[in-house]
Image (cartoon, rainbow over all chains, first blue to last red; front, side, top):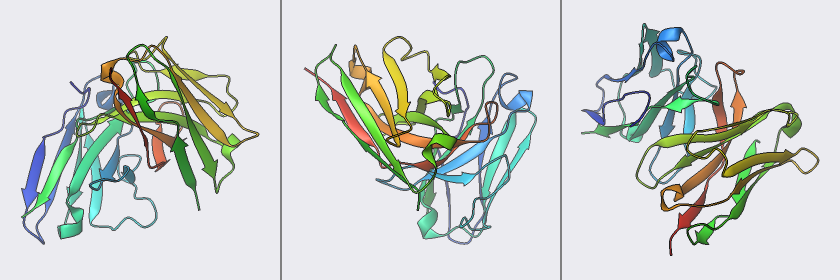
Length: 112
Length: 121
């Protein structure tokens, strides 16, 4: 069971807006630690999508946005496109665990 | 262009060992912390181990502590993961990743393509 909780799947029609939640605890997101998001297309390695809660690396479309509040964070995809069909993972730091980071269990986004 | 290329995976019996390597290019390797992240096929991501720039600090997930050892050779631009006492549950793709963000906000901005470790008799 993952430290950060994500819904297993979300879906939407092309052009719609979908959101993915990432729920943590007082030892990670609730403690103020940043949340980062990754996109993993089928058969490929993960790719950084959002860092520091709401920052996009160069080359990531502005259709992707992140937010954080309390013990949760969210990734929003607006204007959903077929190429957005992928797995999405949130990641943060947890002060109760050793090491670098903890991941959510991942959310499969399906474009209908 | 930043590139990370893992190698060393394969089929190994329970209790066996492997040494995974990650050859880095396109950036100043010695200036970045690095990590290993694994993924059971069809499942989610799990951070495994991390190392600071100067090799003086290493970090491990509880699930691998005492069995895995992360190291780096900055003269060869290469990251390593020695995996010992392997168990079936260690079967996964192992990715090396470059770390940004500092000790309390680490994130992974570049990933390799992964190397598959299969533990089976």
